Length: 174
Image (cartoon, rainbow, N blue to C red; front, side, top):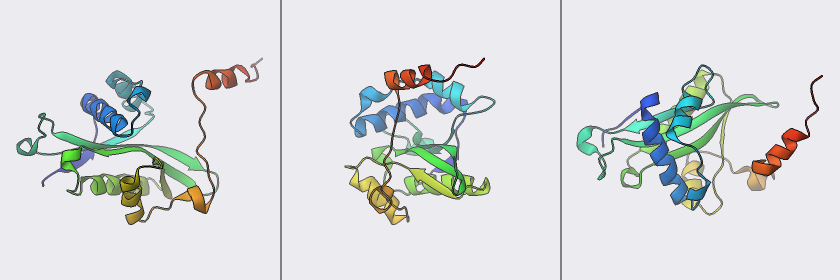
């Protein structure tokens, strides 16, 4: 199947937003999605973007049953390791189910790695739900290491009221 991987643009945000919801449904967490395509536009296509995104696009004659030509995305951002230096974090990699098995996911992943490599990143990190064996196997087949058991890392998050409490405990500037 023909497809191309390209940098997302502001006009792709509605399609990316649609696929974010599709991924959330697959991950059994659709109620967790709180952002809109407007927020994606604001945060990804500003002077100092919070993320970068690639999309997979098929020709019109291969469009989805629903008429979509943007059929996958990879959303990522840059982090910094105090041990290793420049790093990338892959927040989402998604391909619509009817387009899986055509190399689109592999191409998105490889392109994200290439972009990071060109910027001097020494690693690419991501998280996968523990029950999502197909996805864990996909990354393992590409050489990813699961650090859960080997290094004992836990993924920690502050949000909502707990984040607000933390903010309120910050020392006040004089």
